[in-house]
View (cartoon, rainbow, N blue to C red):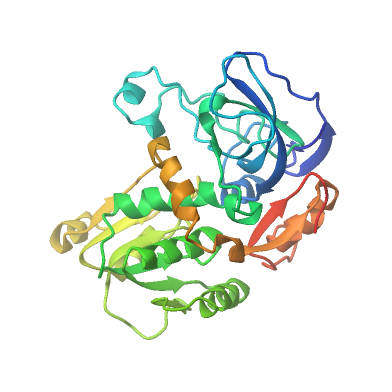
Length: 340
């Protein structure tokens, strides 16, 4: 099968790999229809997040089941499914206490990071990490279920409530989904983005939706009242998040950037009553709820590009990867069968 693997020079290389087959009773093989290009994938290629050279990248996948192991009972060939790539062992102490996202046996289980992922024609995965999607849900919506689960985890970790003033830092796909979901929770939302393209794209997305209490802004504009909840989807803006937060505000660090550091005055946290939250990966117990919630959110409006594996250079350019490249897309999706 064709796949895109991480080269040692942090490029994506089109490679041939053996087609996967079921090896255990709970194995499922799916034909990958789409895989979203995640901000973490972008971070790997830019040197902001580690991954194993040679690994097949990608984890935000949807597809169709084509083979099942003898013990599989929840899906069958022909079913349309979405992948939950936050794998867990189910047996360690944390898993048995329901803390699946903090499983201690993570080595070798991170799809697209240290275990071959979904930038491939086929993917083999254990049954418990696959969820059927409604027959009327388009793949362009289903491919954003996993990002939606990430957002749900972070907004709920911050205790987001109706009437909260929420500031989302970064209007990429994750930030836009965060603003959309916070609005659904009944909050008023400021979505802050420096990049002109992404700011315009977010404005266009929300302009087409009725009754949305979302304001897209450039950071550093007219000072406004502080936010009850600040979501840093970039992963390097903790100091800025503290400055935006209202007293007693809750700050969620969501973006992944292994190089980022921040200077925060502990006395400010103490005197202002600020709470800084690291929610981690989502707990897989909420993934089914993310599938259900996606039925009511127009997530497909965030997808701007589809590229085939032979168009990966164009995909990277749309994501602002390359010398002098700027953003030219929001959610970029790779399709093994070719771009649209």
